[in-house]
Amino acid sequence: MDVSGASGQPRSGDDKPAEHPAGPTAPEAPPPRRPKEPGGGILMGRPFGVPVYVAPSWFLVAALITWVFGGQLDRVLPQLGAARYLVSLFFAVAFYASVLVHELAHTVAAIRFKLPVRRIQLQFFGGVSEIEKEAETPGREFVLAFVGPLLSLVLAGLFYLAMKPVQPGTVPGILLAGLMVSNLIVAIFNLLPGLPLDGGRMLRAVVWKITGKPMSGTVAAAWVGRALAVAVLIGLPLLNSSGALGGGNPDTGGMDTVTDALLAAILAAIIWTGAGNSLRMARLREHLPELRARTLTRRAVPVETDTPLSEALRRANAAGARALVVVDADGHPLSLVRESAIVGVPEHRRPWVAVSSLAQDLTDGMRVSAELAGEELLDALRAAPATEYLVVEETGEIYGVLSAADV
Image (cartoon, rainbow, N blue to C red; front, side):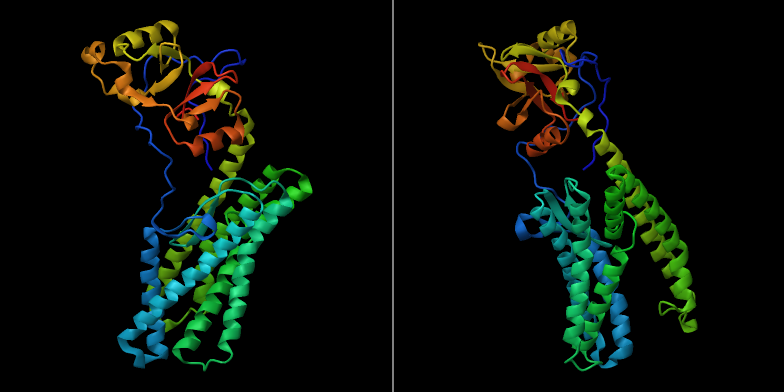
């Protein structure tokens, strides 16, 4: 979850909504009529009620795995011919099924700890479980991080046991060996102690437990992650060229060296960026208690349904307000006039356009309490995505309008 700073100056005190310059700002996209599901590729299913998406980048890595693994099969089982690519494609799918099991372990643990999971996405370099809230204790954070590599280790063990009755040098034997090794690599790589890897989250939990400060754990794990990124960038090509990782074959020419360097650069960039993002999000989370609906709310002017837009804007300017709420004859709010709709009306037509024609009907999710703050405020906005929300007092009295852009 990412939160940007509020546009406009916060005010001191809670007696009035924040005053912004009168008139609409830059155009905003029209609000969705109903909450949309998180996207991110092709929806494959909903295990445990969590949508699983395959990102377009997965097809690229599946093709790469099929090509590379097919070349290895050609050296070991040349009699397969072109069928080796079907076997390689099966391996790519089976490997990412193992990655999905890894991510489902995180998801099940998150659900067990009552943490909402937005989605699981399989992408170029593995998968990611998007858990929307932080664990409440370092112990839960450690468990949440550890279960993924643990499941990968269990899968590696199961594939090893499955290899025992299978004759080596056959298609089943090679597939099982490849899946065993790949799951072992996934487990070991994810146990490296740097964010955004699972091992980094485990290190964060340990430092959090020792210091009592989750931010201290995040800072430590993020900087270890950055150091890890540099180590991968420099060390992976060196290890492979030395033969420690099975590379260093002089017959392959310089192409493998370029490939190793490119792979190391991509991995290092992912780790470095992920560590930085984890640090930024943790710093933003520290300020979540300061995120208050009452502070961010814009002053609003109530106008009746048939009020011309030009007259409504004149009243807003006179009151120093920046939002319009359409009300009925008794003063009950009916809808919110969208800023994007106002911008789309030329000034010479505004005396002839009624505010009701530019308004978004209010739903229950678009009414938020002025007392909401922090995670509770973000949860309320996530539950009913829109560009503007009506902020009301506990008595039901109109307090103002909250723009999602300000949050």
